[in-house]
Image (cartoon, rainbow, N blue to C red; front, side, top):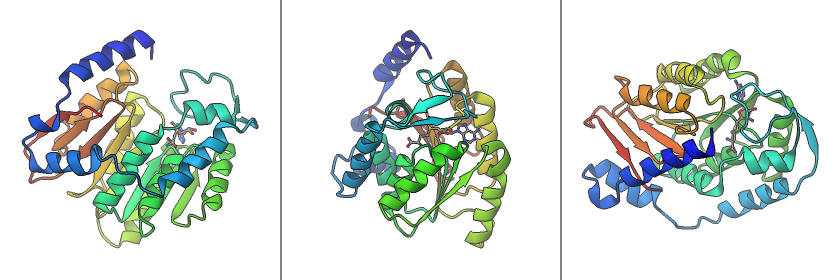
Length: 269
Ligand SMILES: C[S@@+](CC[C@H](N)C(=O)[O-])C[C@H]1O[C@@H](n2cnc3c(N)ncnc32)[C@H](O)[C@@H]1O
């Protein structure tokens, strides 16, 4: 995505964004004030950010086969861990938002598409040790680092699967379904953070949607990253099962609550 395009897109977002005073939906107002704009510091943030710092200073080089849309900055297949940590991971602010979403909705199951070094996985897993987190990563070398990071922090509720989303997502969804013992995932959260292109994003969305219910929460990363991703976001908003979306520019949150009048919010974050 070009810098000019990002800037224009961000300006459009900035001037459209609502504050809590503009929001009349009690569900969204409550979410905004207690979760999205909650600046409270949780002690569990500390060990994760310490780990990120170690990764930011790790000069080791790894061979990476990119199965997704690629990186705007990292163009070679040999990458330093420090560069991956700098350019591919969500900043603390967003990891901490995922932590608060998990803390608030208490999903039984979390599915993450795109583990990378495991930072957002840790934020979600540490928010609730009872939650089962399934995370998928395409690169075995990167996944090894993520596993090491989960061990370092002693986190046991993460199941890391290595494979292309195209090949392994369906079996992971089937597995979650069986383990839940129900036809749909109860209060599940899915974080889509890999392969940021329209067609695959919509395909993964449709696949996960088959297992979603009224309480599910889907979070999409980089909804304004490219024109392609903006088109994907518009399709998701229009989908008949989607009732509520919240656009925070760098991520978008999607709900399926039937009790909600269909509405789309753009909120400053
Ligand atoms: C942006 S990073 C994830 C960052 C991580 N969620 C965080 O913020 O801590 C996206 C990851 O998805 C992986 N990925 C992209 N496309 C994929 C695909 N088709 N199948 C499996 N993994 C893929 C990449 O290897 C990369 O590590």
